[in-house]
Picture (cartoon, rainbow, N blue to C red):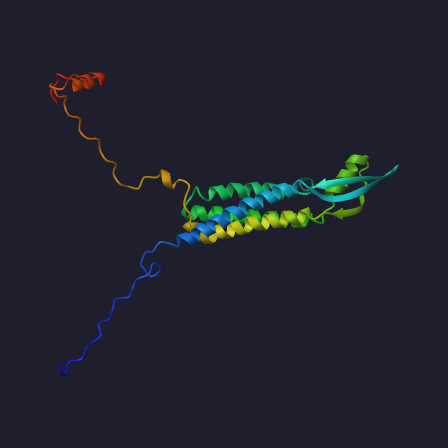
Length: 224
């Protein structure tokens, strides 16, 4: 037909999951952040606890018969990193037991415990107080001091473990709202439970029904 032109009909745009209102968060990204947070927190706490038990400082105390070699491990220097690592482990588990604002508070505690473990380990890397106290206790001389003092790399390993805990806390703060809760599977979804079907009276023509009623403690002769 002349004078009639085809008018293109606009096609509806496909709606993606990201543009849909109320779209669920990226489950793959949530799983990755969850796995990373668990791994960083667990590994970091393990590193801190193990490295805190290693020798951090070495030296010699002067005695009448020469020099007495002494060592101090991380817990002698400072007990803060190990204690904060335990707090971090507890917070890492508690993240999955709470929701909403409680989860953010626990995630912040996790991050702070990692930060505290890092700073205390770093400060203990150059500390000589523990060895001085060991020298005074060993020699019986309160004025005894340590010479030839040296420090190992274990304080810095402990600090790295604290940084891993800190990263786990930051991940929990950023993505923790998408993570599942430990108690979620125990909660009811609000749907009513199906009621039990009403029990019918036993059929007198079926002896097995009469015996079942007697087993339940019912009177089969009573009308429903």
